[in-house]
Image 1 (spheres, rainbow, N blue to C red):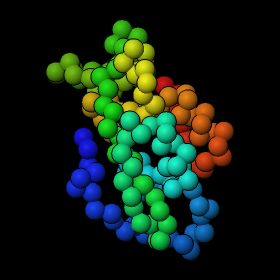
Image 2 (cartoon, rainbow, N blue to C red):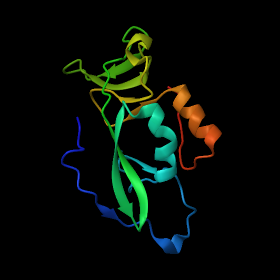
Image 3 (tube, rainbow, N blue to C red):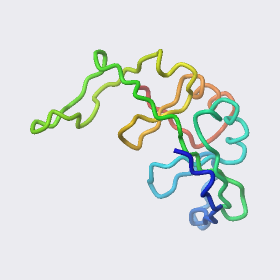
Image 4 (cartoon, rainbow, N blue to C red):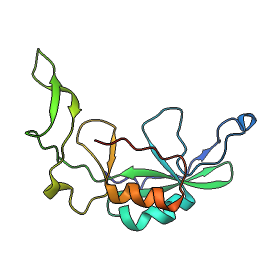
Length: 143
C-alpha cells in the first residue's frame, strides 16, 4: 500500500566510515528486508518500475537515496509447477522449495512481492538493466 502521503524524509547515517567500504547503488540496512536505491539507481530504474513501487526519499549522510516501497503485490505463484514444504498441523505453506510464476499475472510488472513474506522478485529485464548499467551492490538469485 502507498506510503507517500505520510512519508517524512528520514536522515540515516551510512555504515561506519572507518571500514572504508566502496559506495554502492544498493545499500543494505543491517540485514533488514528493505530496498534502498542510490539516486543513480533510482533514476535508471524508475521508468521500468514506477508502476510497481514508490520512491521515498532518504537523506543518508547528505547523499540522496530512496526507500523503495514495492506496491505490486501479486498472487502469481503457479502451484502446479512450484514445490513447497507444508506445516503438518495445518497444511499451510511453510516455504517454497522452488517457485514458478504465472506469466499472465506478472506480465507488465518488473518488481513485485508475494502476498506473504518480505522477499522481492524482479524480472530478467530488471536484472539485465542493472547488470548492463554498471550499478553496484545488487545480487540476484535465479528462481
